[in-house]
Amino acid sequence: MTRIVHVNGQFLPEDQAVVSVFDRGFLMADGVYEVTSVLGGKLIDFAGHCARLARSLAELEMQNPHTDAEWLDLHRELVARNGVVDGMVYLQVTRGNPGDRDFAYPGADTRPTVVLFTQSKPGLAENPAARTGWRVISIPDLRWGRRDIKTVQLLYPSMAKMAARKAQVDDAWFVEDGAVTEGTSNNAYIVKGHRIITRHLSEDILHGITRAAVIRLAREAQMEVVERPFTIAEAKEADEAFVTSASAFVMPVVEVDGAMIGKGTPGPVVARLREIYLEEMRKSAI
Image 1: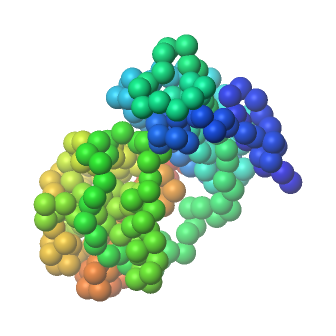
Image 2: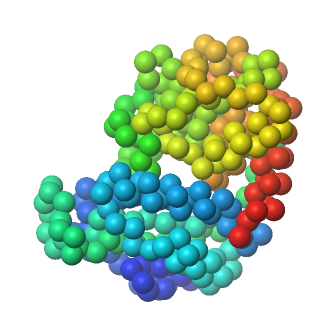
Image 3: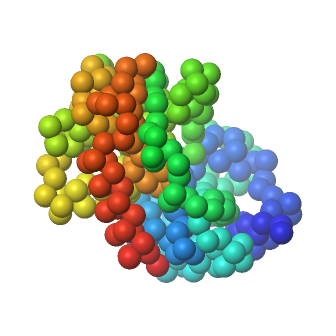
């Protein structure tokens, strides 16, 4: 079956979808995106993704082309048209096509470009990696300073993921000024003495939607959460570690830079967090 995508108000077969070569997303990486997971045909934490999208657009002085209700209709229509049971919906908004290339922002009459597509991932919540855990390496964080804006400029995270692949591990953690910022496409955590430690929100990291939900659920479960930077040395001495993201949910990390974390297997705190998160997200999915 040919996948149906959405481009600027039209639902089209993917091989018929086009965007201008003058689009600023293509020329300048001048755009933002969101990825919402789908479990059982329903959208996970959708309100959070809409709120972050609006924030990212506002930070870049871009107009939001749809209301939250319209975004929801578009997501649901794509999920239905593509028969997605488990998977993701990718959304991208760019500053649009001004008709030529220029560093200056175009005028308000340039309409944003809107693209959505689905990715089917059967058994997304039953990822076998959750039973074995990820191994990660650390690399310098050389990204731009506004990581809190979820932009489409993902070249350095892509380079980091390739570095991880070459090292035959699962992912990389970025390090800046001696402390871990986050993973290539996820927020990073350690567990020490039943305390969950993760970097505080700032312009240094993405304000993860899954992060917010996991921290809320952890505190509701009477788990202590400390928001502060931690080092790779601390991670090596931790009892457990994990990452969170819209597609990995809560994923244990069992090794960093070749050093085993804890017993080298997923621990009870992370296992419980993943269980609580998936249970809550399935209940609240729309």
